[in-house]
Image 1: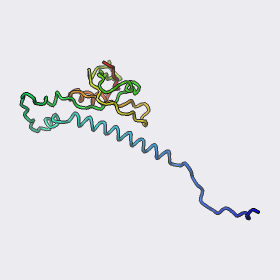
Image 2 (image 1 turned 180 degrees about the vertical axis):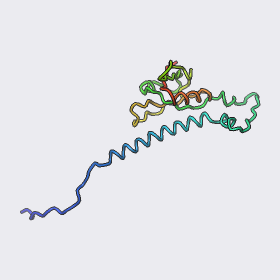
Image 3 (image 1 turned 120 degrees about the vertical axis):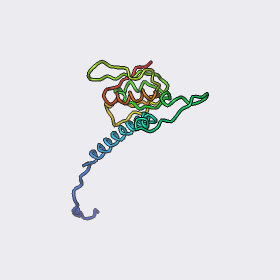
Image 4 (image 1 turned 180 degrees about the horizontal axis):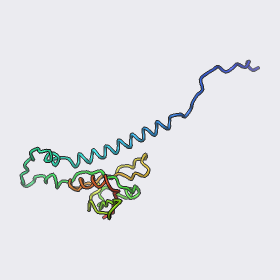
Length: 162
């Protein structure tokens, strides 16, 4: 024999799935913003160095040329994170490859902003960015890094293998 039927107790209605997508989207947006901010800060730190001190009026340290001395700061390569517009092209790159970086602005012809730049690292693609390109870390002289950062802020960047 079955037990007698009982009424269902009253409870507030369940609202399943409300707000979960909004929270995930907000977290993704913040991750994208944080990654972009980190890339800009890394580029600024890579470009800053002693050049920034000189522009603020700080005395420049004297460098004496001697055998076995490190090359001057302007000649040493720095790591410059650069966002390339075509993510599929970046997937073809490997550390150690040499590339030319081309800036394609909306007005005017494209121009080469870095010739023969060495690929230092190709980070994993950010799954949250659909058509924002892909990041690649280049090892270039400090002046070239400064040019790359400026070009990346105003133009879409592309690479050609050397």
